[in-house]
Amino acid sequence: MKERLEQIKANAVREIQKSDGLAKLNDVRVAFLGKKGELTAVLKGMKDVLPEDRPMVGQLVNETRESIEKLIEETKSKLEAAEREFRMKQEVIDVTLPAKKNRVGHRHPNTIALEEVERIFVGMGYEVVEGPEVEYDYYNFEALNIPANHPAKDEQDTFYINDEIVLRTQTSPVQVREMEKGKLPIRMIAPGRVFRSDEVDATHSPSFHQIEGLVIDKHITFADLKGTLAEFAKQLFGEGTKVKFRPHHFPFTEPSAEVDVTCFKCGGKGCRFCKGAGWIEILGCGMVHPRVLKMSGIDPEEYSGFAFGVGLERIALLKYEIDDMRLLYENDDRFLKQF
Ligand code: DAH
Image (cartoon, rainbow, N blue to C red):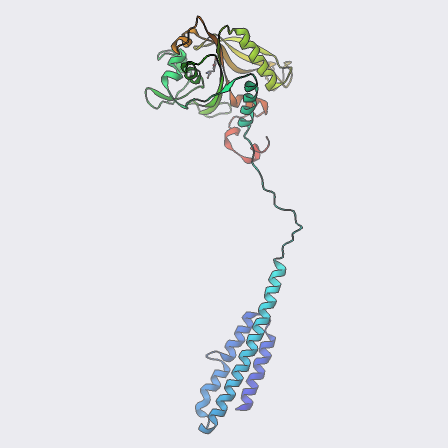
């Protein structure tokens, strides 16, 4: 019996020393000490041992078991330490590697263009004001001399909330709101979102932005309007930029004009950018109609003024040479990060 136990112990020691991983070591433990293990088999055979020998054999079995267990424990600690060491080496952090860059976002091309326009007009003493996007039909149309049955109303496909309330189709209603306040003179620009029931294409969107301008004071003439917009065009598109006023019709201004600027790509000679014209249309303007002044409580005999309205996207597209308005709204990072 003694030899058998020593044999088992020797085998166990050999197997333990051969174990090169925790899983293998566990297999060894099960093979010798487990329920069906070799040592357990010896214990089961105790009934065949003479009763007087049993204490001695029992002690021997226990000693063998203890020494195998001890060796397994020691080996387990060593293997664990080795595995930890190995993992640490694998996971080592190289502090000299360049850090991942945090990308900071930046302003949208519309915002950059708006801030540029605001800078120019604030520099000329204008105030920046805002009006509601959900607007009364009265402010959006009626008070701007566009009565219910006026054909000009057809030109702006409108989103109606109900008979009296619309999503504003233009920033012009902010003119009326400012005039109604009764504080004169007025020198303001009003940027903001406007809405039209338009299909999306390269130059149309159901939601876009305009910047409205309004000046009301005594003795304001068309010459003031011309000088102001000429200065605006120069600051926005470059010193050499010229403006051209083409007669046009807007219900709320009389006379009215559309303004073209010389193409800042070719300087007016005609190129692909301006489609050979040498000129690019940028805005609508005019002298505020006396009826509009009167409706807002201003005496047209004493005061006069001019107004203009410019599309913000139009400026952003021109300034950054973007050929499709949809790009401004898709928020594709690859596009936006170019500006
Ligand atoms: N509100 C006009 C539009 O959306 C643009 C405009 C033209 C505004 C002439 C004005 C103006 O203030 O005087 O087409």
